Length: 161
Image (cartoon, rainbow, N blue to C red; front, side):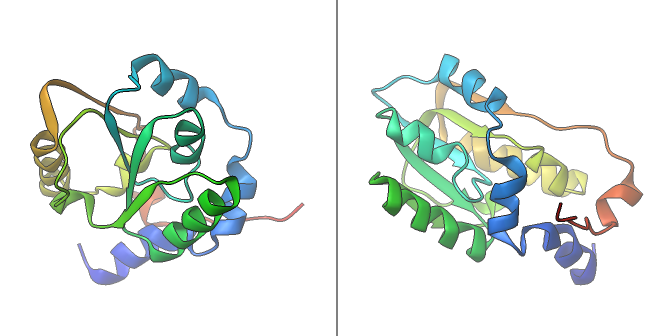
């Protein structure tokens, strides 16, 4: 995959405030994750973005680590966490090469983030990386859709209403 395709794949995250606006109030993912979460564990959220799930999980007392590749999204997540008074460790890393000194019984990645791993090699690296950070019998929850390749390379255009 060319660097240009990779950069275009992440362009929709260039405006973290707009991202928050578009996805505010979306609770379906949180409800599902809460069913699998246990308070006595560290939970990893991959591709955590602006903390859409990491922050409400921390507000409920869960010890969270949020991982994302995008510096701007993480900066927004850190700001929001501070405003909410929750302590969350946010880490800027490529999820295909996780290097966090933690193993968890729950790792999750929502918001169709899996679709950004465009090749079989990238998907395999992601899954191997997750496996290294799961305890035996641990659970990895992720969602995705089956996009057409052309959709992935097209830049999303946000419309303000």
